[in-house]
Length: 232
Image 1 (cartoon, rainbow, N blue to C red):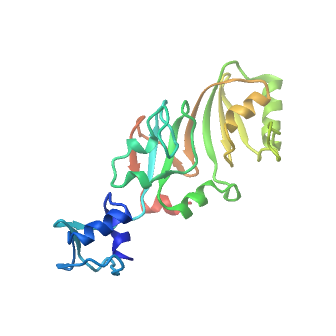
Image 2: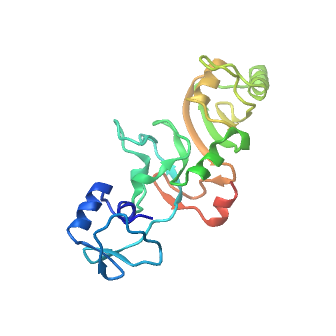
Image 3: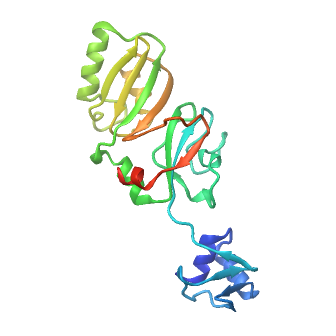
C-alpha cells in the first residue's frame, strides 16, 4: 500500500493532507523520515505520525438496536445518523446493510465489508428479515386468510415492475403481525399492508437471518463474532 494511502486509512488526513505531512517530515517508517508518498508499506512496517504509531483498521461488523428518530443514510439530514451511535475508529466508513425508516426501530447491521453486505442483502440468498408489525386495525378471519395467501404468492405494488417475493405472514395478536421478507424494497412492509387495506402504526425489525437483537437495548451495539459473520 502506498504510504499516502496508508496515512489516509489510519488517520483523519486526506490523501492531499497526508502528502503535506510527509513533506513536513512528520512521518517516519521504521524510525526513518520518509517524504515519498509512493513508498510501499505493509503490516510489518512501523509507521508513525508526529511520534504516534499508526495501524490499519480491519473490516468491522456491527449489530445495533436502532431507536426511533435515527437515520440509516450516509449523510446527516434532519436526524442523527445510526453510525453516530457506534464508538469505533473511522466510524464514517461503516455503511448500513440495508436500511430502516426513521420511524422504524430494531436490528441494523453495519460494516465496511462490501462483499459481506451484498451477501446479506441479495434476494438470491433468501436471508429472511423478521418484522413485528403493529397495525392500526385488527387483521383476522377471512381477511387474514386472504392476506396470508397474497403475501405468500407476491403482491403487485405501485411503481414496481415485478411482484414482491413470497413473504411469510402470521398474527401474534389481532393487531400485531409477524412478517418475514426475503428482499428489501422501498417502504416495503408499509406498502404491502397498504395494498391489502391496512395501515402500519409501528414497525420493528427483530432479526436478520440467524441474528436477533437479543438483550441489546435501543441505541446499544456490539461487534459480531467471527462465527456470526460466517453464517451469512
